[in-house]
Amino acid sequence: MKIRIFKESDTAAVSALWQEVFPYDPPHSAAAVAINQKLECQPELFFVGEIDGQVIGTMLCGYDGHRGWLYLLAIDPAHRRKKLATELLRHAEHELMARGCTKINLQTRTANAAAIGFYHAMGYELEELVSMGKRFAHAVTTS
Image (cartoon, rainbow, N blue to C red; front, side):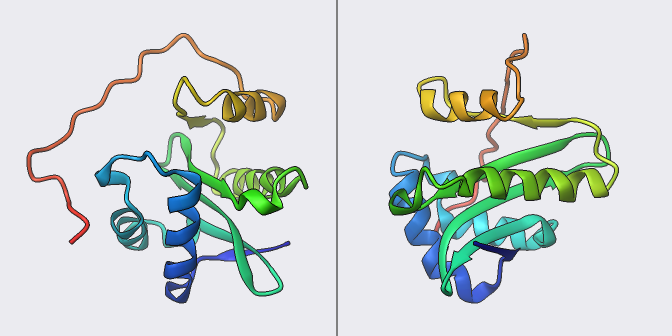
């Protein structure tokens, strides 16, 4: 797998991948929204994995100068169990560490046992924290 920075020409392929991998995500996480937002903020931390020119994986991450964050690690189901998620994750970790990041955080849904197991196997630990959020009334839409 070749890992590279997202290009706008990847939009349709990434959107289709996310729709397949994350079919129940809320509207504010829709590909049209998330891609545009990421292109406005640290687009160099939006990675795609491709095989023979076909996008088969994504990894979004961010760094705020204090902590790194992982978002939207996705692998095409037809390409799973080939260590491709591990490759994308390690690539993201390397890029974040190169920027001075000393700790990476991530969130996943409690019902996503496969993701929790994967991240645990990659050295991530459950932390005794409360995750809180606030949605603004002017939340972006997909139109």
